[in-house]
Image (cartoon, rainbow, N blue to C red; front, side):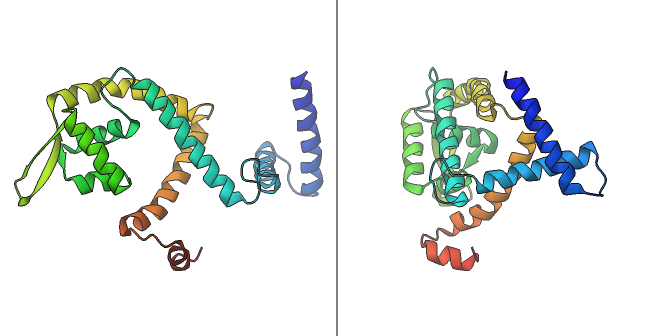
Length: 211
């Protein structure tokens, strides 16, 4: 029954499209472009199911939900490995690629809260996943690196984490994944400088960035 309902909806939409085009060319490509815009406009004007009051709030709510879904999948994937949280693995993966790095730089690479990041580092040190050593370029500072145990376990974790990542992408097509990645990168490029400056006052941020 659902397939007939879908066919009827496509026929109705095709009728709307033809009326909108009037004397303009009618092609499958122009219909696809029109349909994409039509559906986008519909999303913007429909009732917001989670927050109920604005598209900005709805976007923030969905991003938050996606973060929680992702964390759940990662925790399930790493259940048999010595990583207490998803951030334990994320910090370890950064160290695996960076060889060695300072505590503050590691936390900032993850765009993580400083106090929470320090707790992750303490836990990884205690569990002997990472170790700290004297910075050869700065005798007052110390760097972090993986232990042999940490390296072995992060390599084991990659294949399991890939399963979690596959779940996060869920039902998206390759084209949708590419489009979403572009959008998320654009948002990250906007937010990262704000995070790095550690500005906490939202009114100041909104005024500065003319939001």
